[in-house]
Image (cartoon, rainbow, N blue to C red; front, side, top):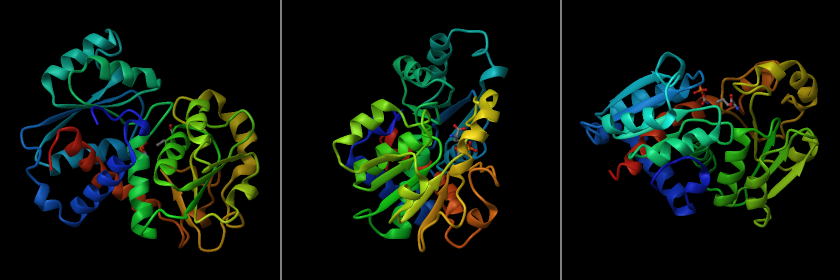
Length: 296
Ligand code: CP
Ligand code: NVA
């Protein structure tokens, strides 16, 4: 793995290796406390963040390295040429992580940075989130064999990375999205021949036999102008307790819009593993940074 821009940058053995390494780091964080001593990560944010920013920054500190935060609009990304800015950043640092609107911006960064680039969320994918989620599923279920995950809602970046990640690991995935809000066509086409992906517009159909039910916001960062229309279209896709099959785990990447895509009863209920997902972001970011820098 040279960069981590999308789940397709990883094969099955690399995903399994990252999950195993993240679990080892979680079990014994002190062992890795100087693994990235002297290394620097630059984190570029075009959108807001709580979990991604903190898990990378604290993760880097706990590995003995240093992380610098750069807000796109308060830096010269706002006025300069993206290639020039990133070429300079690559000369100061060992790793770049970026959260961008358009996926092509992380691809541009990877072309010229001269150091590994990590996608901290784009309009197309959220690979770091899904790697932490797959780790969480392994912790809860022990294995991936025979599992079915249902994703209810917007066919967005989280859904796209979930489709790619689940299909690599052999997890069946059923997506219920409204017409016009389906997941990315290229990712769907790349997955279709695995026979693991089912697409429907009906949430009840999607959750049948599911071991895990996952949802995400109806209005992603940058889609605020579409909010009114989206809230209307997505109303039948709300994850309430009648939609969650008995015994199924509930996942959400957060931030959640309680009362919209998920009810309080479900997100706060005994089947919810959302805070385990969130915690695992920290351990997984460390594993990603170590592997990209050829450590551990
Ligand atoms: N799940 C996630 O990426 O959270 P943030 O947007 O807070 O980083
Ligand atoms: N789909 C959401 C995920 C936030 C972590 C967004 O892009 O805003």
